[in-house]
Image 1 (cartoon, protein in one colour):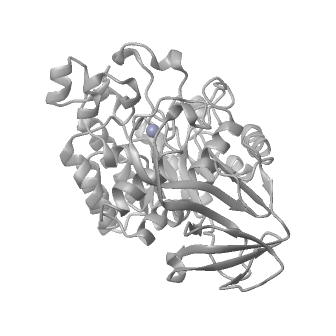
Image 2 (cartoon, rainbow, N blue to C red):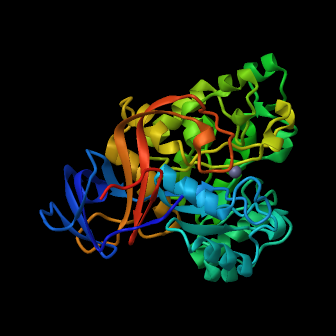
Length: 432
Ligand SMILES: [Zn+2]
């Protein structure tokens, strides 16, 4: 993907500007100049014009949970291909998880990731490991990692199985201000499970992962967060039980935030019936009642973030029998289209709420400033067309991965790309 340098002055015409923080939602023009928002409702003539034909322009989306696979698994994704997938999906920034090889467990690696990402407009914020090599035996140097640029800590892909280490990590989060992102899973309950434990897993003859595996671990971490006063973020909440525990903790004033993925909002264990390994992920696709509960969690605003858990894998890791396949599904290039079509167009979410879930909630969870559409503000904008019809085809993705559980879905609403500072990056060519 080419990065396109913007003209000094560019007038975006026929743009539907939506910024819920500014109570802004109207179709007008926006002048950007030297990487800043110069004027809303601008009538400047003599400047370069890009007619957006009703595309939505909103503060840039931030994907709080992606796997960029570099260093160590460059066959599956690199920082650059992940950034391109992000731009194509409408994300101007992402937080990358530390389950690389080596794991992101020391300051030099955190700085290296940030440097690698600097040549492309999508900002990459590394999440550092909670424990060395993510082995749940010894804490990393969290203060030093935070100073090097880690915005949060997680052993994602695996839980911090030691409650004592999780307690101490949460105590450190009070000093750094950076949350501990928990991949809540009790590995002894997961066992060799390959999908959600249910009548579907019995029918398919696949070993099950019970909801309890997530519920028990979530309750433990919520209790540790309450006891320590630390900051906790729940990654990929997938069960009604974990949601109920979250809401109880929120009522008790625990400092906790939570995310949900598009696949847990839109798919259930029934999607596994064809043994498509793209439907194999952790936590697994749950039951219809869990799926419905997650939507209620969004509408009650207990869950304030949508994050993709974008997890590319090579074909070698996925073109194997279901119970041997790697866990994980792609997410960045489909998230916005899916949630616009099946969320906003289906009447489940207001457009402004969707933008908060992709932009505001994720940044607030890790304490990053939120971009705004106002004169003088820095340009960090997502552009997508709410009426563009398309069919999901993973073969056309910028990601190296092809493990997409939504292959062939027809959607209305499609990301175009991002404006960031002086640059455009995206799947469409700007016309000015
Ligand atoms: Zn995880």
